[in-house]
Length: 447
Image (cartoon, rainbow, N blue to C red; front, side):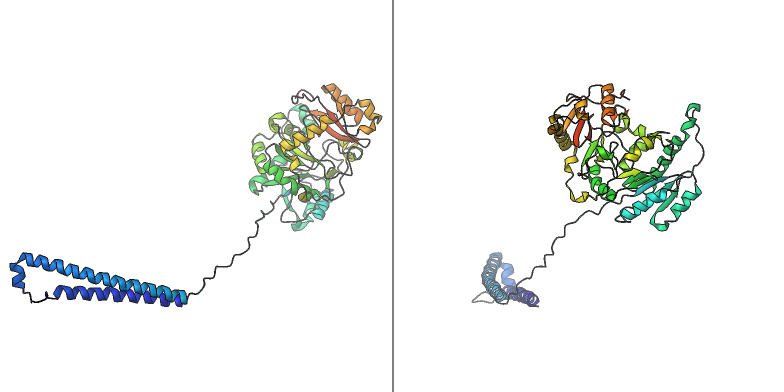
C-alpha cells in the first residue's frame, strides 16, 4: 500500500512539472518585450529584431527551467525523506532447507532360467523370502522345455513372479559328433532369448541370472545391490558373481564373510551383468557352451568379475546336462554363506582396479615362499600367510591338486584366479598359489 502511494506522488509531481513548464513556454512566446507592444508588421520588417526576440525568449525560458529544476530536486528530496520515514522492511522469501537428492536404486530383475525341474520351487521360495523389495528386484522366470509340471509350479506363485516361455522348443541341427550335446545347444538358445527379453523388450539396465537349481544366501540381494555401482563405474569389470569356485568350507575363512575379490575367471552361478554387456555379446552369442565361450580372451578382453570369499549361492540340482558328475565331485561341497553382511554400508572402493592391484599384489608377493609339502604338513605355521609358486601349466596342476584347489584352466585362467593367483585357505591359513612376480599374462594354450 505504501509503495503504491509513493509511486502516485511521484507521478503527480511529474505531471504538475510538465504542465507548469508548458504554460510558461506559452506565456513567454506570447509576451511582448518590456516597454513596447510588438506588432507583426514590425517583426516582419526587422529580421534583426526577430532574432533578438527569439534569443531573449530562449534565455528567459532557460532561467525558468533552471528554477523548475530546483523545484523538482526539492520534490525528490522530500519524497526520499518521506519514504525513509515510512519505509516498510522487505521480508526475504523463506530459505527452504536443501534436501540432498539420493539417486533412486536401480531396478535389477532376477532372471531365473528354468526348464524341467519342478524343484524350481526351492529356488523361488528362497528368492522371495530374502527379497527386500518387489519393486527393486522383480523376479522373472524364463522357462524352456515346455515341461507342464514345472510350469504349474511357477504359475502357483501368481503375481509374485513373472513367467515367460521360450517359444522355440524344436531340436537344433548339430554335427553328428555333437548330438550328445543337444542339451548345451538348447541352453545357449534359451539364454539368448531370455536375456534378449530382459534387455531388449523390458529395457532393464542390468540383471542377475540365476539357474533354477540354485539356493541363495540371506544377503544375496544386499551383495548385488552394493556391487552394482562398482560394475557400473569401473570399466575393468564386466560381471559380479555370487560364486567362489574354491568355496568349499575348509577352503574359506568363515570368520570373514565380508571379503570380496576380483577374478579373471568367469564364475557364473548367480551373476550380474549390464545391458551394455549384453549389447556387446548378443550379436556373436554362441550356439552352445556359452559359459566356456564367455571365458575366452576375445570375450573377456582383460576384464574381471567380483566374487566373494564365501559363496552367496549353492546348487542343489544333481539333475542336468552334466549328469551330476561335477555336482558329486565338487559342487555339493561349496559352502553357502548364512551370515548377513550389510554390504551397502561397507566401503568397497578397495575393489577398484588400481587400488586392488596395488594392495593385493603387494600382499601376495610380500608373503614368504613355502614349498607345497610344508604347506600340506602345516610346517612353519608362525609364518601366517604364505605363497606357493608355480612356473608352468604342469606345476600349477600338480600343486593345485595337492592343495585341493580346482586344477582346470580355461584359456589359461585358473578358477577364481586373478593375475594367475589363486587365493584360498588351507588348514586355517591363507595360501596364495601364484606365478612369479614377473608374470606376463595368461597363456591360452594352458588348458
